[in-house]
Image (cartoon, rainbow, N blue to C red; front, side, top):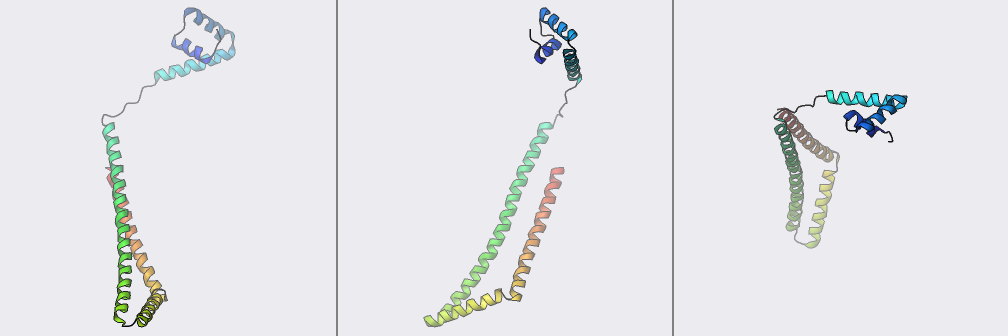
Length: 169
């Protein structure tokens, strides 16, 4: 018989015939290398037998399911929050665009001739561009965007705090 770790394990487990056991005993007593392997495997075997399996609490499955449901709820709420923020920015952009088009149409309808309407429109666009990109205009736009970012950041922070406190329950 050829000696290997599998045969040593079967010997320790008592799964060998009498003749095979005798051969393993001879190999273990005659070779210091196999004796060392045998002692190491026997010690590991004894330690594994002595170990008690960990027990799971009775409500383990319900705890896992509640955490999974809370995680799904959090993902859905985050999606809703982002949808609200994006909708808010979209409404602001649509409002500004509508205001600009309204003023353009108003200036065109007030002009009686085509050339005067083009002149009126170009002067309106020029005035609007000067207003938006002037020092005061960029300050106002930057301040408004900063305020929007601060408010949305506050709500996001509060939402995260609320979700963490809900998970702790």
